[in-house]
Image (cartoon, rainbow, N blue to C red):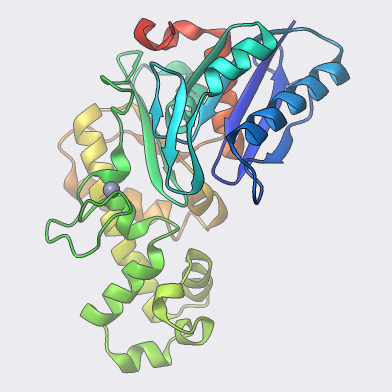
Length: 330
Ligand SMILES: [Zn+2]
């Protein structure tokens, strides 16, 4: 008997089979979440077929399925409500998989899955207080406090990408709020933030002299890769932008540390995993100290890398009691 882990992202869905120890025993199959012109049932069917294909290859029956998915979710109904990056809504993922496979199916949002993955299989194994933060297209997180995974009334307890890091609210977040962390230093919004900084703090001449002005037509098109590459070549403007980025990230991280008092904070997501730690994580660790009241936690990059949500999905299928009863019973 095998466990199925499913990680549904905005672009890719990753599926794998695991044994009872959480060891991945199939290849990790990566499929498009939604292709051009498809509806939510096409998406669900492709997931179903991929699970069947993997279990046929392994030659073993499925015992339970865990899903970590982009949200927002209605956890009580087991549906993905809508997502800013995909033209689908009310995706009945839990019911669909239960009806097709006739086995227990559990789901949580991707960042909650990630922190559970960290607790079961990563650096969280020896701790009861763990926060996971992803800096990717957006910014999100999951938290375990005193051994309990935080869910909240609707399952949205740890929306840390939307803590306020700028009370003047100069940038508007995709969620409609102002001054939110995600609106400043997420992968999607770093260009808008760089553009704001260039207008407010730097002269036009400085920009013209910088490598960054040769990378893109307009500063709003800047990506992390442009800025970190320029910084590695000692471009002074890029270095100063990253210094301010570290301050904003430190403000967000401090709010999390002051709220949850974690033993360990692990970071993941493409922005963290694909850029040099000495330019992003190390300056953040230095700067956060001045903002926190609680004893400094260990701050590191997750050893689970891009598999962290998938591992969390496996973990909830192995140990569904990490999910509150109200979200387990449809
Ligand atoms: Zn927001």
